[in-house]
Length: 313
Image (cartoon, rainbow, N blue to C red; front, side, top):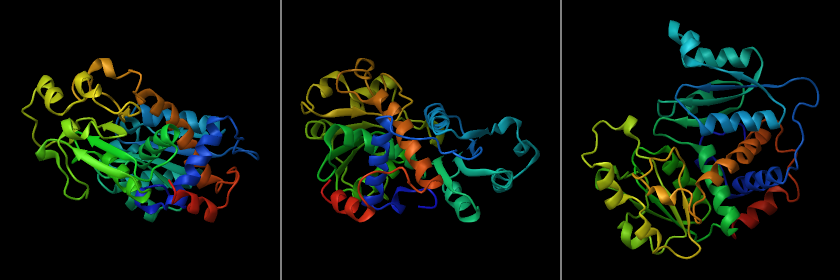
């Protein structure tokens, strides 16, 4: 694995290897990646971020890495510098990996093809968000210990969601059953899973994954009020009560309370929303290790054995 830019690039075995490494990190079994001298990574965020940026910083600091923190509004971008030249500058001055968030679809993938150091996609436009997908997968794994035939319902703004796209790719690789539910105008023909009525699907899913309404990416604003959206397409208390007893609620956040999900459900017993955030640190540590240390801290099984086990997930 040379970069981490798309879930379509990963085999089932590679996903399992990352999950096992994250689990090792959650147990506190890891060492500093900077045994000899300092090692630098750069966080290049061209879009606002709280969870992704901060969890990368915590992951980097736990691994002993030095952070080169980029601020768009005080950078040479304000003088017209291209993102390629900025990224190349950071690699030239010693950054061994670049974590990049950008508003343009596929921009991070293009940079990965051009740069000599590992690139991690921290979200690119409506394209993908693979590290979010990995922490989502880890959350499901911790809950169910398998993926094969797991019923995952993604609800909301499918068309504009990079989280939906990455998870759709990864869950297909792992053999899960994926269903979608959203307003017709937010359906994405490129995500090849069935669209179901929410009130029907909610009773049969193991995972209900709510997606934030991506208003900043909409060409036209929805005519629905927050109250109307919640009643038609959101997770209400009445719908939650009809879920399977062991089903869980997930959301990549930030959460629009009382829009995608009723406020009282955000931290209810079956919600894993804040647990996802915790797991994001361990999974991002795993990605950094795999790119900078070639997964040398991974324990137990070799890649072939992991792949065989992944087929049973």
